Structures are given as structure tokens and as C-alpha cells.
Amino acid sequence: MEYTKQALDHFMNPRNVGEIKDADGIGQVGNMRCGDIMYVYIKVKSRKSKVESGKEEYIEDIKFKTLGCAAAIASSSMMTELAKGKSIDEAGKLSRDDINEALGILPKQKYHCSILSADAIHKAIDDYKAKKAGKQAS
Amino acid sequence: MVNLKKIYLDNAATTLVAPEVRKIIDNVNDKYFGNPSSVHSIGQESHRLLDENRRKIADFVGANVDEIIFTSGGSEGDNLAIRGIVAENRKQNTENDKPHVITSLVEHHAVLHTVQELEKEGLIEATYLRPTADGIITADTVKEAIKDNTILVSLIYVNNETGVVTPIEEIGEVIQKENSRRAAVATPHNLLLPPPLTPPQAGGESLGRGGKIYFHSDAVQAAEWEEMNADKLKIDLLTFTAHKFHGPKGVGALYIRKGTPIKPQITGGSQEFGKRAGTENLAGIAGMAGAITQVKSQESKVKSQVESLRDKLEQGIVDSIPDVIINGKGAKRAPHVSNISFINAEGEAIILNLDFLGIAVSSGSACTSRSLEPSHVLTAMGIPPEKAHGSIRFSLSRYTTEPEIDKVLEVLPPIIKKLREMSPFK
Image (cartoon, rainbow over all chains, first blue to last red; front, side, top):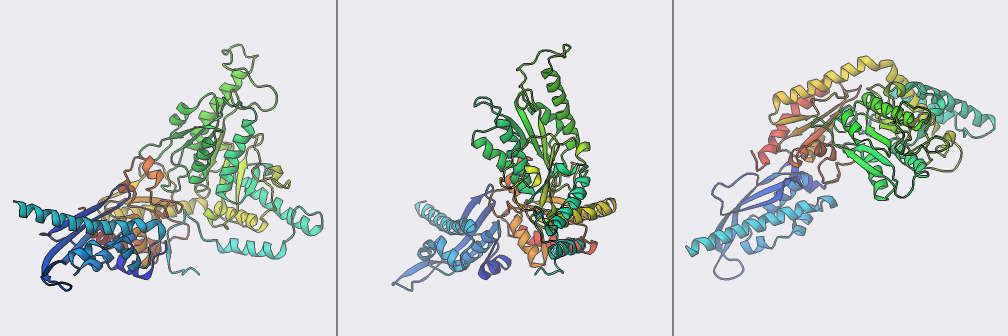
């Protein structure tokens, strides 16, 4: 399996590994059959918007836990780096190709790992939004 | 160029070419370039060398020289055996009377995919035997699977992923008994036995219903470590390949018992008794014979040495790492393979971490490690995918040393710990 330097670096020295106990949103993806499972935890805060007047919500902290191959771990790590500090809207637009390109393109048969990590952040954001809507409703 | 300071524990994938074997290959390439089929003396010298080496290789399996067919290796040997037997048999079978082939779910893909292919083409009916939880194909399951139209049983001798040994001799006996029964039924003079269910076929070697069942084994992983005498094993076809026992790649042999009808799969010249066309790989064949000479001269001592290093590795892992499963532990195993599942760690991640430290291992067979599917062998043994995904195959050789095993035992626990800390599961 040929991995790029970036991918190997993120695999051997993954960034943002861990859990956030009081996470605002959690995304869980993958299954045991394919062997890759990712949990992503986000902490959301609000700050002055850079693009428009008023406030925006952003990912203040992000952590992951992954059981999987080198590509799954590397793409989890890269995804957290790309998402950290981004506004919720920007992070929600992170695509599998963004992650794959940042890793210097994964081997073809490992492409699904970058899909997983993109799905994981989207799910965490959805989870945050759902929780927030639930709070406001009650 | 491979760094020799690296620790190579992937000998079930391939082995290093022994220095003595390398010398033989160089010498043959240097002095015997002639084509063994040529009439002139340069060719005839090559022919003599070919005969000499065929003799050595035939002796290894207790065969006559004309029972050894040189091939390009294990996959070709398996294909020739299975396709060759099926093709010969088909001649005598009608559309509605397909020959039946018995194999197992734990075969190397060279056998498994070949049988599946023939089945898909509608040429055969196939039964895939399920192993025990320890990965053993038992003689009883073979016995139960035999049908009137069974013509071939093909089973792996030593499993390439787990090292589990198939009781070939015992299965050979089951097949011999069935063959004697069939022969008796087919003999009209024998009034003591019930009349045949189907009329015997006329002329030649009768095949198919009432005919013989041929027994083939892929012995690629067994050659260096297990009994290889074809008569003792009661086997008709035996595949082996040089690069699994410190010979060169690209050369192997298929033992074909005299009288076994087989259709060539590579046609052309009349080499290999008309069973496999193509100019012989003389240097490779001489190299294989040299590797066999070495295997024969060092057998018992090396086997126990490799076995005790394998046991030390397993014991050390069990003692220092929680939640590990040694796959096939309850079965008789060849000494050189150990297959271990590390729960909550993934195989490729373990391999790459070890590779960074100069240690070469694999997950399952080299053929499956590039696919995303969990190993078909472990899956057939009933090991769930999440455990199969975390399995590593360590395979040793006569060149493996104790300090190398110590090194693995030193670096492996922190790797597994690190990966498990990264996992969402506890």
C-alpha cells in the first residue's frame, strides 16, 4: 500500500486524538464489517463573524477516536485539523475530496476512509444542531 | 535492496533465496544455456542436468521421474491439477451429468477461485467444506460430501494463513476406500456385492460415475515442514513451489500419479511428458532441487527450532498483551506460521507500525492484504469480521533468530496499546 508522506505522518502522529466529555455534538460512522469505526466529538462556541456583522458559531475544539486502518486514522486526524477553528457552516461543507487532497490522495481502495471522516464531521454538526433545536424547543 | 538488518517474519509470503541455491542458479545460467530439447551436445548437456534435477525432486515426494511436471509455481500447479482433471473427465460426461469437485472454504485463492470459476462456467458441481473453529478440514466432512459423481477432492495441506495442517493421509484413506468400493461395484464378476447403481463405463480409465476420485493437495506451505511422500499421503496430485522453501520464484512442480488422466492447460511443445508445454526453466529447476536438498539435510533440527521460536513469540504476546486470540491454536499446525487476532486494533495499522521499526509481517495472505474484505479463511472458521480485521500473520523461517523474536516482543505491546487508546472501544 503506498501512502504519501502527509498520510503516513498523520497516521503515525495523529492530531486531536481523544474524547470531549461534555461534547456539544458527536458523530459516529463506520461499521465492524468494513473494519473502520470513527467517533468525532466537537465543542462549539460563538465569536464575532469574520464575513458578516454579528456572531457565528465555530468549532472551538474537536477530538476523534478511530478503530481502523492507516487511512482511516490519517483521514480522521486530517479532518480534525481542517475542521478546527472553522465556522459551523464552513466545517459542514468539508468534503471527502478536501480531506483526500490534504492527505496527498489516498490509495484508491482506501478512498472510502476519507468519505467516512467527512461523514463523521457532518454527523457531529447535525447532532449539535439537533441538540440545540431540542433545547430551544423545550 | 532489502536492508538485512530488517526482521523478516513474512516467510509464508515468500522466503529469501538461500546463498547455496543462489550459487547453483548462477552456475546453471552461466554454463547451461542450451535448450534441453535441442539435439546438439549443448542442448543435451542441459537435458542431462534437467533429468538429474527431476530425479532429485521426484525422490523428495517418493515419485518416479515421469510423475513430476515442472510449472511456474503454486498457482499454475493448482490450475493444472484442477482444470486438467476436470477437462479430461468432461469428455465422458453429458450436460446433465456434471462432475462433482470437493474443496474447502479455507483454500488458497489459486484453488478456491479456480473451482469457483469452473462452477460458474457450468462445468462442475462444487462443494466447499467448512472447517472446524480451529480451521481443520476433517476426514468425516470429506466422507459426507462424497457423491456418486465426485471426481476430485482438492484440499490445502498447510493453511497459508493459519498454518493449520489438514489430515491428508486420513482423507487419502477415505478416498481410497471409496475408490475400492466403486471398483468393486463396477466389476460385474463380483457377485458378493450389490449390482452397480449406474452401468460401468466402457474402455480406458473409467471416470465420473463409478470412476475414480482423484485427490489433489496444494502443499505449497507444507513442503519444508510436513510429510511429502505421495504414497504415504495416498495422494494423486501434489502442488509445491520453490520460493516457499528458500528457492527461486517462478518455478514449482506438480506431482501427478501415474495413470492420472490430465489435460494440459498450456499447449505447444511436448515438454514435460506432453503435459506442460514451454522451454524448461532450467536454472530455476536446479535451484528448486538445491533448495530441496537443503530441506532434506536439515529437517528435524530446524523444525523444532522454528517451532520453539514460534511458541516463544505466541507465549510472549499472550503474556504481555491482553485480548489476543491465537487462531487455529487447538489444531495441529506447521511450525512456521502464527496467526493472531488483536481485539480493537486493525491489521494494516499494526503492520505499518511494525514496518516503521523494520519488522515485516502480514495480515492474512499477501493476496488479501490489499483488499478490504476480512480474510476468507478466518471468516470460514467463524471468526467475526471485527476480530478478523485485527489479525496478523507472523511466519518464520530457518533463518529467524531468537533476538529477532525478542525484538518483536519488545516493540509490539506499545504499538497495540497506542492503537487501542485511539479506538472508541474499550
